[in-house]
Length: 162
Image (cartoon, rainbow, N blue to C red; front, side, top):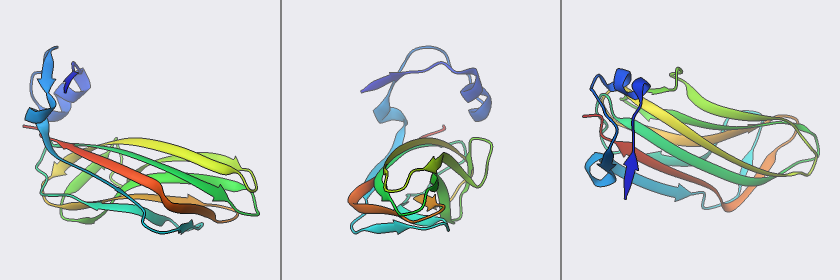
């Protein structure tokens, strides 16, 4: 599989000169992982882990592409529902966009008993090498959000920055 790429922003981030063309995935992929929750997850108002992946070693300038999705049911009180991708451990420095904390998406005022289907795609940049734990998490204001077994899924692809 190949992807096409030509991005001034990416050129600036990794300090190289990139031109339009085809780059084989095999040459740039450092590792890929996917996982799903094994049991029921009850997401509360506090940030609640849904799926966790532990990376191999990452190096400065590597890019981390993460896709996560959930399907759940909102409880008896309406409120915001948030899906989050974040670093939750390890020694590497990871920037999610312009944030060192996380990448998140919030759906305001999710209705009582609603089926919540959310997907989130995050791009991370390794600012200092090491290992890290990548987590798909959620928060549910008003009432809990219940995610059935295997209904929370995450895929992580680490691309070599060199």
